[in-house]
Structure formats: structure tokens, C-alpha cells
Length: 109
Image (cartoon, rainbow, N blue to C red; front, side, top):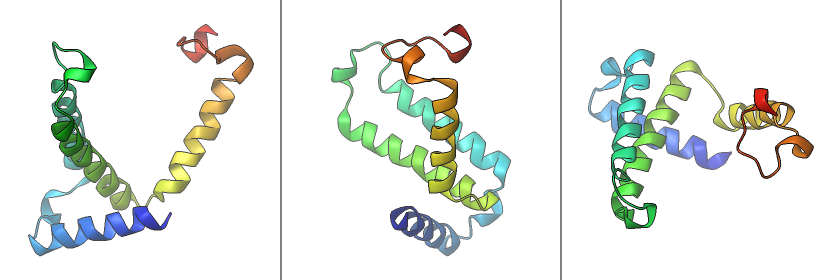
């Protein structure tokens, strides 16, 4: 996935120019990812999803992606590979004939 490598390179350049790698250990990246996810959720709090500010949703989603990519890079994960592997695993946990049209968890199918 050429795009993910390009994104990671841009993130690393941005980070390194500011000497922030010292703060980007896996624990703190995971914490930052969670905090940014919470900020994304906050945009939907107490309102209908269509009432959320779409520009702010884009900004917070970009922050979530950024920290997720940085965390993947820290561990040397190939983003495409781990996502495709997870889709395969979920396909086994959620076979179409049992899961289609239902929101039940795999252990309730």
C-alpha cells in the first residue's frame, strides 16, 4: 500500500523535524491514540450523527489515523498486512451465513 508508506514517511518527517521521537514510545502513542479517539467521540456526544461538525470529524479522524500509523511504524508492522490479516480473522469469526444482517458478537451467533 504505497499510500500508507507515504503517510508514515510524512508523519516521521514532521515528528523528526520537531525532535518528538523521544515522546513517541509505544505506550504514549497508544495513549495518544485513545485520547484522540475520545475527542472524535466527543463530537457526537448528545447530538444526532448528522449534526456533528464534519470538518472537526475530519481533523480528529486524521489525528486517530496519525497515531495509529505511528504506533504501527514503531513496531515495524505493515499496515496493509495487519488490516488484511484482521479481516481474514474476522471472516472466520463472523461467517456470512451466521452474521449477515445481525450485530451479534461472534460468540452469540
